[in-house]
Length: 131
Image (cartoon, rainbow, N blue to C red; front, side, top):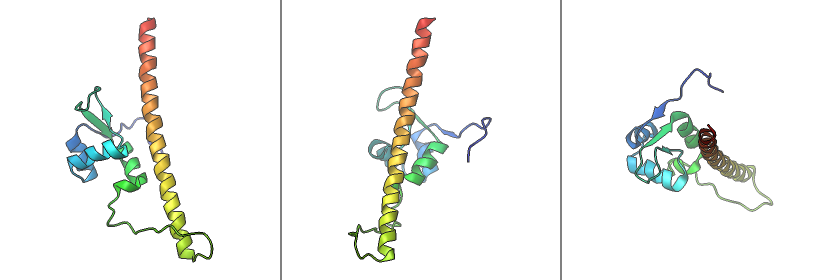
């Protein structure tokens, strides 16, 4: 469902706000950014630059990234060989494949979003030079 153009997204302006929103600790969300590609934007270029994130991006990332879910709550899916599988085994395999696909789509979406932001900044810079 698309949001109306007049609504502004909820912006979280620090690691503490992001962590509180996700119900995790600050170090956990920092590790997720580093290792799993949590969609956090930096103001500046250094590792210690201030960060912000939108609730929409975080919600999408949490719903599509398997690694962000609590592993104790997740059933263990076993890869079974094709052949004389039971319907339950087939559904487990299909569910695991669907989760991997959703994760790949989410990672690609975040990567494309970041590339679009970089391109937009470059276009803005080029326009300012032409004036």
